[in-house]
Length: 179
Image (tube, rainbow, N blue to C red; front, side, top):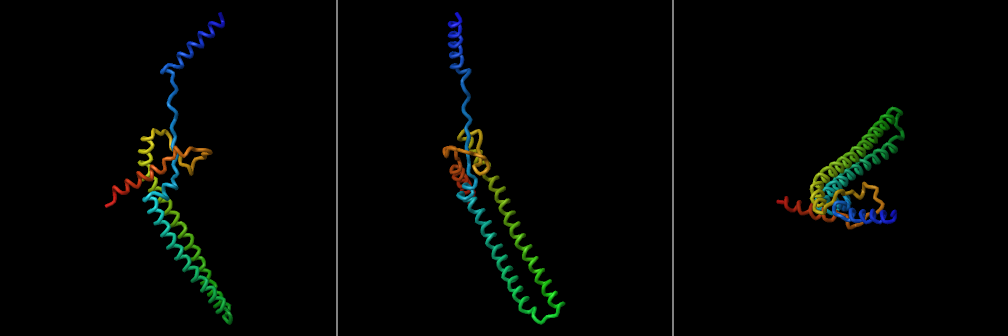
C-alpha cells in the first residue's frame, strides 16, 4: 500500500513537472564586451585616442623644451656663481628655484590636461556606445552585458563577446553621419 502510494505520487509528480505549466524558464543570456578593444578598433575610438595622443606629444615637447631651458639655466648658474657676491648668488638661485617650480607646475598641468582629455573621451565614447550596445544586446536577447575590464570574471566564453559587433555598428553609424 505504501509502495503503491509512493509510485502514484512519483507518477503524478512526473506528469506535473513535465507539463508546460512547470517548465523551466529560459536561461539568462549574458554578453560581454571589451571596451578597450572597441575603443582601439572602432573609428570613433581611434580618432579620440589619436587626439589624446597628439595632445600628449605636444605637451611632452613643451615639457622637454622647458626642461632643457632649466638645465641651461642651472649650468649658467654654476658657471657664473664664481666671483659673485653672496647677494647676487642668492638672487640667481632664487631665479633658478622659481624656474624649477614653474617647470614642476607645467608638468603637473600637462598631466592634468591629458587626464581631463581622457576622462572626457571616455564619457563621450560611452555615450555613443550605449545605444549601440543596447541594440546589439536586444537583438541577441541578452539580459546582462558585462565589461570584461571591470567585472571580476574568472571564465567567459568568447561566444558571448559582442565587442566586434559593436565596433561594426559604431563604425556604420559614423559612416552614415559623415558628410
